[in-house]
Image 1 (tube, rainbow, N blue to C red):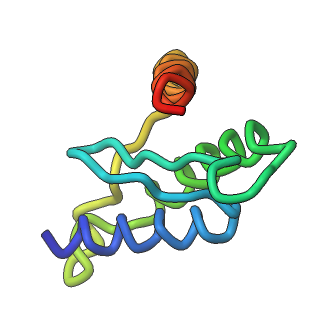
Image 2: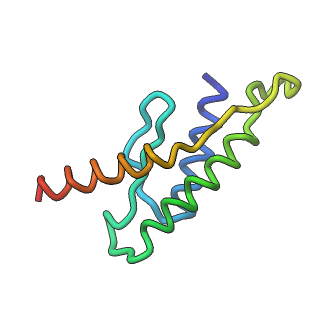
Length: 97
């Protein structure tokens, strides 16, 4: 549980740094969106940079703060899922308006 807290704190800080809004965290999915609170013409680039930085950051979080020999959090980026999620959220938000 402590490792997840450290990981989610890192991801939350990255979202703030990239000026993205954290929607929620479900299981191993950390959902952030751009262009929601304020107009951001570069929101797609912000999301991609967040994903790349999140990948690097996750790999730097030790599984155990007490025993770093256990290794780091394995992380991967699925760009197909990134595109599908973007499309689904985009459509869902447009339907609500």
